[in-house]
Length: 253
Image (cartoon, rainbow, N blue to C red):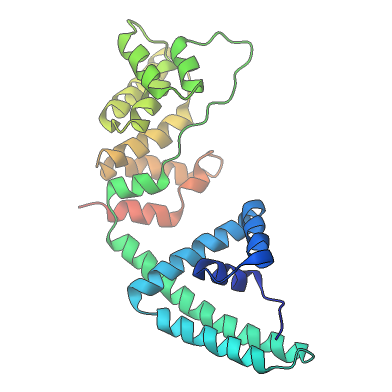
């Protein structure tokens, strides 16, 4: 039997709990060290779950068993024949996986909701260190990821700094208070316009749009996402793909 399994085959066996010893240690290390392997594992895990849901598990199991039996019967010296067989069987499994992933994508599309899409998309804003500047207490709390403190200090401030509205908006959003996040982001937009400042302009558009999603207002999010999608230089352009826009528009009543 040829022991030169592909990474994909090892990942499948890893998901099935069939690996042990050196092979298990090796694939765990590969998963930890290699982002591409982690992504493939995630996709295979999704496919495995979908296969169970759509009744395709037996098809893949049969192909896998057929492949393993034939590989056992092959002479190890016939390397070329073994490789060709593995490619054939892998292609058949891949075809099923593609079918399943397509079904999953359709299922996810049909069962989508604004909050679900928000949860799938949201990542917290990462504030880069600013040097040579005096920060407000709210900004310092935000840098320390203390969102409750950000909200507490913002609510108690008589006149927050202009930038503090952005930090407060993100803090509210992270604490599942999208309506308050919307108010903070819109206030900052208005202050930028009135004072001729440009604090977090591109960031506001993205996180305000996400706030609208979280607040079940996809119609208000669409123009902002379309603006980001149309601008290839926007730092959030890659986050707003054509497929993402289609999903947002699907949320419209």
